[in-house]
Length: 159
Image (cartoon, rainbow, N blue to C red):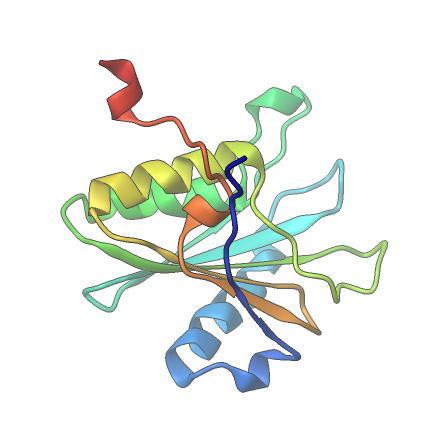
């Protein structure tokens, strides 16, 4: 039986990150304050690093009609793709703040965001590094979204 395996890096804190990843994650943490989350109070921030050096930020935006909201990852990536359509995305940092908890366990992208990131990897023709952390505590680094979505749907499936 085939088995899907992958590796990831787990750090005890963001202090162990290199300078570029630390800065990107810091931006994701900082932007959580701009999230519009009046229903869940779960504020998510995302920072997208482009190869040209630009960092594009996004937050989750909730709506009383729940399916109409947008996650921070898709918010940031949509903005990056709109502003820099020909630029390659090299990394994404994701963080959150919730007043109901300790904010120490990293949150991972939802399934819809995993598929969206997968599409960006296909467009890039290269992997996108994912850096995930809460406001405090552990940091996870994953080399490609394919590790989180091993059987992704792509343009190949549309043929």
